[in-house]
Length: 559
Image (tube, rainbow, N blue to C red):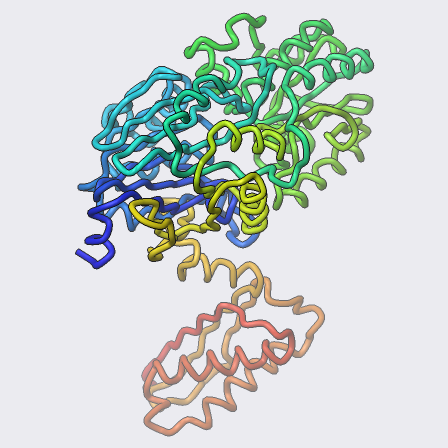
């Protein structure tokens, strides 16, 4: 047991291992007298720094090593950055999971994919209910978001109350599910709230995030102005409110909705099992799209962020088995651009435009509202909850700094900037960061999880940016190179631009080898190392690159 573990045996603590200092990949821990509770366990999506990787999860090693003191996982809602890593990381936790009916439906699909469907104890908790786990008493409070059953958590402990907001907004007309239950939020806050751990995504946006019903009205008008051709709308499959909005406006404009993309079928199926979307006309399968007149169809597609394997990108490339778009058709991107996705998304916009397809984004028309609170909504929540301490999460460093400044301007006594790995003591005594624990990221790759900053992916990055070289050096039993070394390049440089390159490589290898001592020439390791260094020197000089280089020595005995 470490000194920190001894300290944690008494008091209330907050420890984020994901989702603080970044947007996505949430993994939040609360500790009360040595017992732990996990709130959310989500994924993030990889960028160019992780070639060949699609999904990243937080490194759970620190809490997994203490799983005998881990009471449960509570999932606030069904977005991937909050629930997407549960199935992959649960074997390291092996504790009960608690969540709402809709989120449980989504989670059950993920657990089944990982072969854990019968192994994980998933407890379904009614939205707006209450429960106790150890010294944690939890009141679930309905808040609106872009997905049903988002539950804020008022966590009551012997040391005080903490509101964990989750993702939220104050939408008076949410389209799917109830409005935010601010009356209950007021009630559970009346006895005093020690701290609020709160969403920071839209802290720079003035006013309010906007209502889903307003998007519905805008899309209705937009579709009326597009009387001909196929219309395709792409949005997040998890945005159930937007799916209902699109289905509603399609029906009003005499268009049949065709689902294009596996995740849409999964999400709508889960929503219907949980009691949502059942008042809509049936969705059609993409295999039936060809039988519907072009001006009577609305294609609802995945791939709103330009994902290469998303349905919209495959349609744009002409690679989809059942769906095609042609000149005069229209694609509406009913979503915002997530930072980091700009390049792939704008490339998709251009590809569609070059094919004669009309592209409409939130920059052109009112086709999207965020699911996160803008400054006016944050202000309203602080005035309701009245926490003594503000702890912004779900944001990058600049979001968290701005959120702290906003909270202090509203009269909050203390605002703490926190990042992944910070151990924050909340009570008793003054709230302060007392330690740091290891936190990191794991890439989901073939066969399992690998450290994002580990040797494996470091090598892959070097291969992407520097290329690779393989070579064979043939020597006899006297240590003499008997033939020109064989060198093969992959992605290092264009050999057509360097006609004398192979001669130069051979010369450098031979020169370096001949400078070896006699006994070193009889050592395969020394011969390999010398040839390796000679090759690397050539490419540092020619291109400033350090390609992955593998040299093999073949030694034979002369008769």
